Image 1 (cartoon, one colour):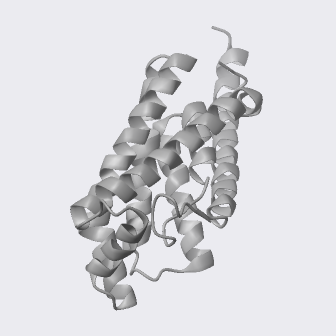
Image 2 (cartoon, helix red, strand yellow):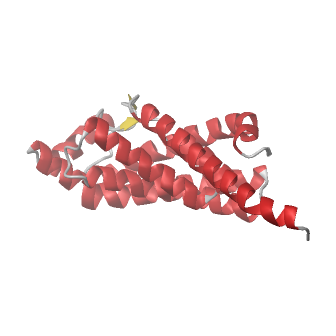
Length: 212
């Protein structure tokens, strides 16, 4: 090994770190902006459940840089959203959003990191979508709905009644999270996954110089 090669290595490493930080910052900013554009799915859940596409740049960053980077992007997204919008749930809603986001992106990132193929990415996103739906059910039942009930001065049963107005099969909290919350998160995961499949190949060159 010559001295020139050895001298270049720290510079290359530093350049890589700088690029990763810039990409994390860029994707976090895009995710924060997307988080501002929310769309209700009134055929699935009450209107206070609104879907956004903020997990899309987080997922793309996870595929490009790994699960740890994805978690960092998710955290910065939540932090920036707090700065912009504040909180009306004493940070409970933001914590739940972070946990559900990680439940979605981490399985996808781990599968793709293990073997970087389109098939593994699809399997990972499918697992992440299911895990997000399951985690969302527990968080809504035991954390989010009680927090929102306290924040808005309403009993939890009022939210269940809103769900029953959409789906008469909902007759309690368990039915609400299974028949309203879970389908909502499944649809969100599927939409984000499909968009990631369409977009990743086109922007991966900008992020890593690689594609499926």
